[in-house]
Length: 262
Image 1 (spheres, rainbow, N blue to C red):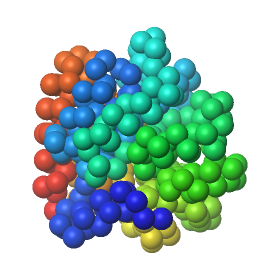
Image 2: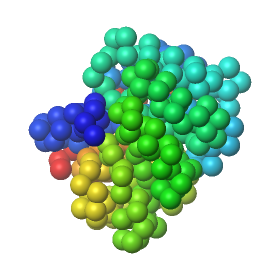
Image 3: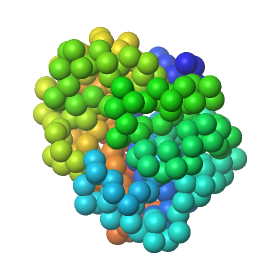
């Protein structure tokens, strides 16, 4: 599958630099302004969170962010509306939705995929559908040119990894620690070995996230991966200081990631 995700990682490889992936929550504060500002701040790929009441893989920061967004009236339709508005002025930056199965299933897989394509979405990370149960969703997404991106973890052994990477597209998201988002990040040397293993099994770029908060952490992880993901720290900065604080943090972290020596 060739879409903006593949194009962007090909560009990063040609530049010889790792990428920076920024996660934010749709509907938390002035999220449209933040979404629009992320590419200029240094985000190579954007993960746009779909708020859900029971985000089991997320720590306190993103849990609170999701509840704030829901309290403010954000819906799945609203997420698509924000993506579509973003695409009015940015046609190049890959946009990946990240969330949970319940709202997607409620909308209907085909309808979700169709609306996502119409809004200019490039990929989906659905945290709580295992590979054995995602064929209906994957088929719908593939029909609309949207990558289904799966997650691998430190507990994913070689046999399980084969199942995880089969039919995965875009990139593989490697969770650097056991636990929830915002937890301490994994040691860079351990991440490097894991990235090599996942990349060998999948043939896809590998991005690493969960727990990265500082420029030093971003640079250390980025040196071992195709890209580093930051989420909770951006969500916290947005909540505490608004769009200006969040974009400044993204600028600082992305510069550290881009400057890492692979």
